[in-house]
Length: 215
Image (tube, one colour):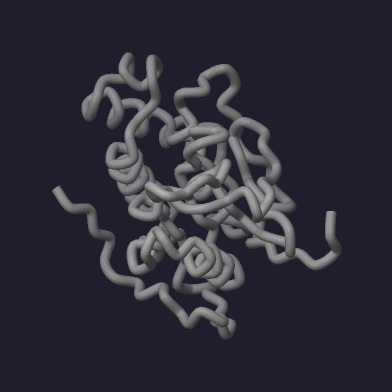
């Protein structure tokens, strides 16, 4: 791996929770993995706490679209965003550590993939893991935790380690990229008590507006 690497706290020290054969639950496990990173090193989730979060997620999904539907075909982006909000709220109440999320790619046109990927890099330099939907090659929800000159590094429930930076674009009618990120649903997670504020070549497009999900 290239020597110069930007990576969020905990991504080297921790191991991602794995979904096993339940491939349709990547939406749940990606969110749990992002939460795990934001809590590190102050809180290491116990087995009981992790079970509580899993149960909370399963109950939400069963109410929202039925767990049978999820097991058959996964979940759509809107359900995944709502699930993320539910799990983060539960984690905040359970641990006392406030995790917040923003949607930074909504301010960038999906046609401007280079700018969007630079926004992701900017957030990673701030210590913010990015929850993304990767359409195309994987059709998978995952967490981007770092980057090198040639790769985006993943903290992934299915064991994926990285994707080539040149293979990543945005969901757009003209995109031919192997991996395409859904801009509307991409979620940057952060903790206000440990933010880093580097200068970003694209400017700081993280506006920290309230968590917003249109009806």
